Picture 1 (cartoon, one colour):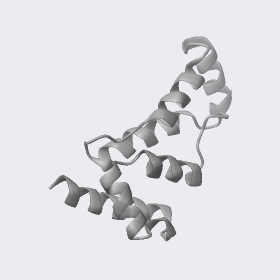
Picture 2 (cartoon, rainbow, N blue to C red):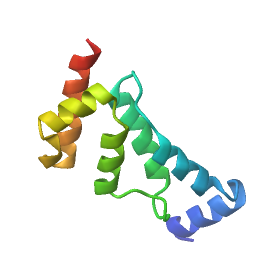
Picture 3 (cartoon, one colour):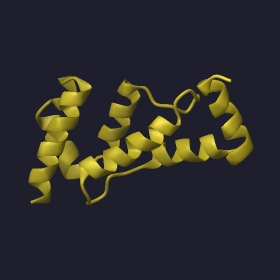
Length: 105
């Protein structure tokens, strides 16, 4: 059995039948709040990773849009002002982390 087939079988046998919908909704409804952007995005990316090979998985562009729209309002305003969305995703994450650390101080 391939790993992909194993995961399909594992999900079928061990997870609630609506696990994908519930986890996907959790990702889509997530908001940063007052805490750390870095911690929040790590948790969100971990959940999204669990959705790989499902219709609920967010590709990098959609994930960036979700993270951007769910970011703390003050951080979001700085992101827009500095035109960070023009950066590649990994650079964008690093810059968001730096801006958020300044916000938290």
